[in-house]
Image 1 (cartoon, one colour):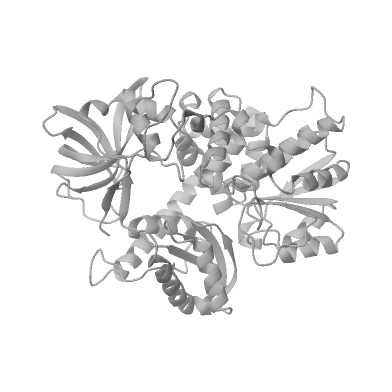
Image 2 (image 1 turned 180 degrees about the horizontal axis):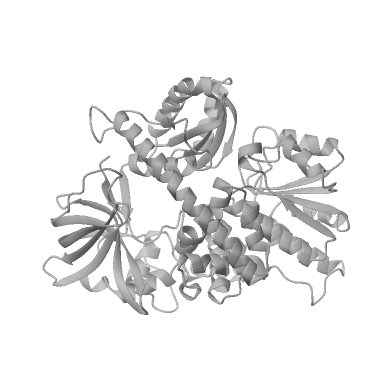
Length: 575
């Protein structure tokens, strides 16, 4: 698909007490920042704990089970793992008598608090089940727990269905009527707020003293889970992530995060949100995709550095296995896309794309959907077999197409198609009968077409404009890195401009390494475009003038820091 560059418009100037780096000032202005206080990431500016509905009732429910047995039931991704570890660490630190966790094996039980998970959980005889990063759609599972006499506290951030489960208490900023100032909290953010409210209540009740840990030490887990779940970095989430990054940079984080950073080759002192997203999160997620997320949770729970290194090593092995599986699946998906775009290469007639291959691994289909979505700039759902008659799919969407609402509309129009679904605006999961796949694909294409009719163009790439040659500098890269955290809805700064490609070579089979020069300026730069060459495609080295969309990066090698351009798009210079 062709790409059209759109430069973000600056929306006025920022009123700041001290001068900002000129490029950073322009970047902030393009993101709607008006005043310096909007950039304040101190904990004092965090939305008050008491403003999240349901916290009071949730805290009282937890207190009633202080001497009972509590089982935390989490999700099998990084948000679920960090949520589970945070809740277990906090409750044990607060002196709760018996706290354990259980995470569903996605291949056996699927997602959420199902009746089967409740039956498994009941073997531990809990008095209270607490869900983290799931539960708001688990009507049958909650009913099964209550029928057994087990109380249920749901903490979740996913969008609810038409009917809420009959839990004792639900804490979720996305419930209808919620007036909490941040609906973008990740599951780990919701868990953090619950534990913060509990810590305050314990102090009021005289059940906490100076030796009782606070909640600030949990912010490293909050930062990791929030970044990994790719939720929008609204002002509240930016505070949570920034405060967590500060703790990790100061090495005041759990041993498991330090061990995963070591394996990823990321120095804590210079940590950015992107390091968590691309260095730590994939290794943690690999456990839930390939094996059992309990490994990841244990890695985040242990206080023994040696045990953390051992568990992190196992996570790294699983991530290598995941990459091998994904590479084969990506080849299959790319072949299917080539069929879809024939006889017009580069053109795609479908609005919503559905992919399925019998051999695909259901833990990795989300990654396939994400990569194909990036290439086609269309919503994509990739399916794998759950059993011979059932498919589980993972959906990824584009701005302007709310993928959960798309599935909701399909379920309303065609009640027989989807067995169950849930998710967010940009990502969702679903289950359907294999026999319904073709009918679902037609319904999905039609519904997405309705959304795309009013959505912004999907072929646009936004940038922060062109940098002057003198601004393409290590100093600018440092200023932009310090100006984060960057992420979803607060995008990392990117720029575009015409460069002359002086040399280009392929490294690692798919990555394009270049030496590029600003025409007429006499300044040249190291540049790299990751995954530039499709699997199996012929490599033709680019030469001459090219229009690059790029980000400024700091490449650290043998103790020396150098500027490097990370090229996201390499386009003809005539554009």
